[in-house]
Image (tube, rainbow, N blue to C red):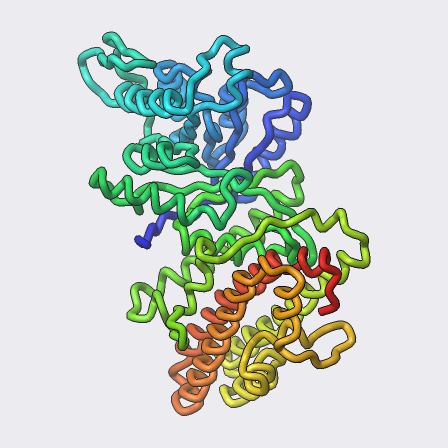
Length: 497
């Protein structure tokens, strides 16, 4: 994948509920004050309980100073593009160049038709959006003559361009299906999917369609901004959802999207002030730091495959959500509490491993600060639960099976065969997890080698740090995937792991 290199933006997706208008303004001001980069407002003009998006965006522009604003995304069938061009440019002027423009081809056609708008077929909606892009750009391009465009859905018959936005307003298209993704690749400045309609594991395949279309059009795919509307829950331990857990878990998962798929704008659906602050003050800085650290390394010969295993799978390949098998799951909350607790034992086990990883990082910083030595760090790593299991059993699987509440030793062949025997469809997931166990074991071996090298030459600390970063990337991603795929089946099947 190309190095997208866009500056990371973090924002708030605020619901334009008319009854909560005081809250919306307060949270927009808060977002501006705590350093968020952008505010998105959905546009559903047919909903009587919602404020008009453009009126709200204008109000928010007047109450904020630095945060960017955008409709996320405009309902194009009810917003004629010629008028929209004037409105967006005007708001960009009045806000000091803080407007981007999300565009949607339309949805909820009964509501649109009830407001007097057209009822497009899917193909017509895409064609209309393409014409709208041409109208918008034509009216933002200075010229002495009137613009003439003769489209099937939109026409300009001598309209004069202007006013002109003080900065190039990005046209970010909400796209999920092939034709819309291809249109985004050919013409869009940005892409705006939402996690509710495009799960993280689906982004890779969508990106490939978009990138291929951009290349066919002679464009650099890396120039296209990728924004992601997200939702989640902050909690003490990692849960089942993609964004369900403490801020560190959020940061790890969003970092993977930034590095793996080029996502550079994360807009959180939020109605709670506390969540807004946690996102801005804990998650955003952690993601920025992790992404900056990775990009600062620059291209390396081993960047794509730092560790090779017998099956030929590169270490970072385990982070590719698009290749990980996924199975439909039922609602774990519908199960009896005892079964829910049984399934979530796996999370408790993994929390122990996450804690050990934190110990490694702390010890590394002590070595860097001169308060400890490499030999002590190596000794500590060799005493870790996951390390002991690797050397004694030859696989990584046991580290997830042994650390149960009873602390009894369970053979590494126990949990996975039991799962497949109880539900045969889990076999592809188990096979992938076993492969990832081998990769992680290889990363640990490389880390040990780097520590030996540092003992001989203290200046080789960066090599250890690289291996620890790689271990963190791969292990945390693996633990999340295993929890997402196995917690519910373990609970539902009532297995004693």
